[in-house]
Amino acid sequence: MAANTPEDLDRLFAEGVNAGDAAAVAALYESDGVLVFQGTTFQGPEQIRGFLEGMIAAKPEITMNVKHVVRAGDVAVLYNDWTMTTTGADGKTETSSGKAIEVVRRQPDGSWKYVIDDPNARD
Image (cartoon, rainbow, N blue to C red; front, side):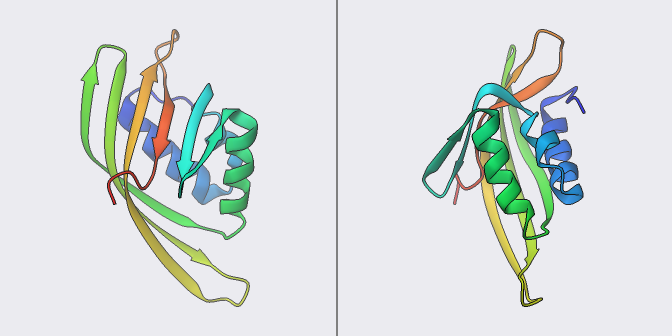
């Protein structure tokens, strides 16, 4: 699962989360990549995967909509709006949303990976 464009990252992220595949989603980040969630920073594949496993346990359905991309050579910033629906142990659904900023970088093989991912940066 490789992102050929910066925008591909958000599509692959959503597909991986919706399929319950935390490992595939964590692989979309650089080895020292950072995911920020509600003031907590998760860095590197192990921490990011652990966070994602917790999120995926709620059986989420996430939709991501890239609003704008700014490119500067091998680096890009993505602005996306996302919505996620989860189901609790009691069967009740809950919907959350946010406005993300993501810094991504083209890799030597031409694919793109997240460097910094803050899903609530614009809230």
